[in-house]
Image 1 (spheres, rainbow, N blue to C red):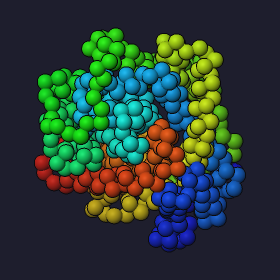
Image 2 (cartoon, helix red, strand yellow; image 1 turned 30 degrees about the vertical axis):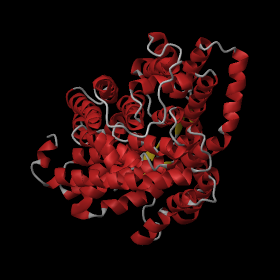
Image 3 (cartoon, helix red, strand yellow; image 1 turned 60 degrees about the horizontal axis):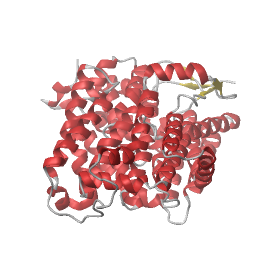
Amino acid sequence: MIWRQSYDPLQNVVLSTLVAALPLVVLLGLLASRRIRAHYAALGGLVVAVLVAVFVIGMPVGMALAAAEFGALYGLLPIGWIIINVLFLYHLAEQRGLLDDLRNAITHVTVDPRLQLLLIAFSFGAFFEGAAGFGTPVAVTSVLLIGLGFAPLQASGLSLIANTAPVAFGALGTPIIALQGVTGLDLQQLSQMVGRQLPIFSLMIPFWLICAFAGFRGMLDVWPALLVAGLTFAVPQFLVSNFHGPWLVDIVSAICSIVALTWFLRYWSPPQYEVRSTPRKDAGGLAQPAFYLRAFMPWLVLSAFVFVWGLPQVKALLNGLSAPTLPIHGLDRLVQRVPPVVQVVTTEPAVFLCNWLSASGTAILLSAIVSGLLMRYRLSEMLRIYVRTVWLVRQSLITIAAMLALGYTTRYSGEDVILGLAFARTGAMYPFFGAMLGWLGVALTGSDTSSNVLFGSLQKITAHQIGVSPVLMAAANSSGGVMGKMIDAQSIVVASTATRWYGQEWRILRFVIFHSIALAALVGVLVLLQAYVAPFTRMVPH
């Protein structure tokens, strides 16, 4: 039976919007509560989403449950699969003392925690975002920051703040490619437009990040390094996105930032700051290349595997070997999206791609096994550590599955579209609220790619209606969306799990929510200027 979405089920725009917002309000409200664990909050939000879908919007019960099942599967693969294997690698390195070696190697570059944070969370994290995306950078960088002595809240929250500007070009440009697919707009123009928005924030984020960690005065002491890291990321981001395309933007930019910042820190050091640790004098030949090779070995192996796995040719080959498609019974091609969200009535596919071999988590698992063998673990030892890791993250896996189940239920029921249409009714101010719509999409789905698929067509249609560039508004969906990445429930759970700070998700949410809203609003202001005010209007490709 075909079911058609309804975008005003209560025949009152305000009431329909308020009811559609209930699942998100319940989820974030319970997460912010100090007494409700994250998996209970996620399950509570999911129950409300299903109830709204069935009893308010009129979605058949079987379809609503099938949508939740689809989301839960996606939550376990690829998201949960990444978390398990990153923590497995972390535990292997921890038990062999390589985290101590890593801490000493990095403190030999700089003992200043502000610069360690900049190097790991911003520069190194951007590389993992470009190569893999889907939660990998937050998981890896928060684990590394814990190893460097950062508190769990700092490691989690600051990793989330840092993982913003690279997101639109993450996973080898997947969000932009998906945006082109649903809008039919020129891929190169979309890449150019996003590349004329996010570099401004790539230059800003290092300053914002360190200010959030060390305060304004602490940030001023290290401004030359922040400028180097931001500038050497922003300039390549602009050049590659505008003159090549979306595929290698983050990879090239991150490598430039890592190399430039490391080189700069050889010749420049900030005023004395509170030092967490200094290199040990007996660190096994700290100045010897072999020491650095041992310290960075697991993370170099991880980087190599993740990068190779992210190559389109490799991914296509692995998908051909191992990716059966599983249509979701009772949901696939049975839900219709209707105007004004799409130009013509379309049926929504619901096919789970079981791409376990090409998933980033598999690359991380293989890198952990190779690293474990290089660290002289026996296979039986690694198996024991792996089983213990799975047990440790059991509740987080439930949480992630429930979060994605909630997101997919709102998507297939049309609850998210009801919220999106509220933004689309803002008239001349729509360029500002269009960016905020992208922010909402990522907050709901946990993915810039999913937000672009969800709202890309709506952005294009609304742009035509109000007389602004559809390329600008489609790009704004992606650029605004990156700022929602730090508050989506999925990312918060990934961060809390990676730092083993279970049950404290509300603290992380409270830590990052101001930064998320403020940065998203700044993106909205930039898009508003690009829509109406010269010379910003010249930034829009024609």
